[in-house]
Amino acid sequence: DTAVSQTPKYLVTQMGNDKSIKCEQNLGHDTMYWYKQDSKKFLKIMFSYNNKELIINETVPNRFSPKSPDKAHLNLHINSLELGDSAVYFCASSLGQPNTEAFFGQGTRLTVV
Amino acid sequence: AQRVTQPEKLLSVFKGAPVELKCNYSYSGSPELFWYVQYSRQRLQLLLRHISRESIKGFTADLNKGETSFHLKKPFAQEEDSAMYYCALSGRAGGYNKLIFGAGTRLAVHP
Image 1 (cartoon, rainbow over the protein chains, first blue to last red):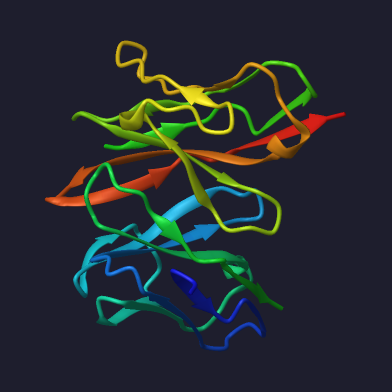
Image 2 (cartoon, rainbow over the protein chains, first blue to last red):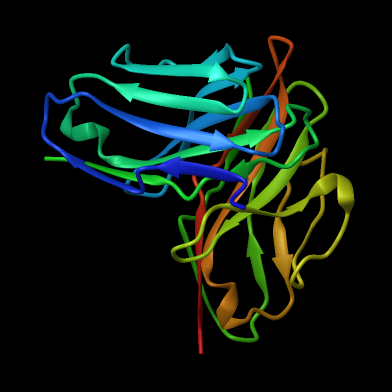
């Protein structure tokens, strides 16, 4: 069983569209994250949720809206997609304690044309 | 504020050569530091954490609080070590845990 799974793996869409990326973890973790990896492989935190509550929002445009229906899921919805949103988006989960390992999904490669 | 700096975008070495991937951090509290690795077409995964003081795949990393560094070292690089390496810091922010990463260093080991 895959611990952290994201769908879709690839997403190609036009500018201005709205799209969602889903993430699910079956590890029983209480903390989930979204990271953006740009073309230079720089990995930047976007959001963090703890038990369905938003705890970190790293100055991400309002067009990005995370939603956590339960602590096993953290979805990312993006409105009015722009060319600069093209990147690989990674979901991750952890127990939320400082010395615990984060487990990552395989990533979603978003291409906006 | 938490910050992780990896000064080298690319480190290119020959097989058998020693490797040191640099990582410096900024954090006001007591940090928890990690190295994560991303092999080609694979997901990001934990390589090692400072609290374990272990050697994984021949890699070690020592936390130096005086220099605020956590450099990753291996005495003899192998071709299969070629990957993206990320230094990460886990600390408390607003009562919750925050995990941030450096910009990453691509290690290329040539035959």
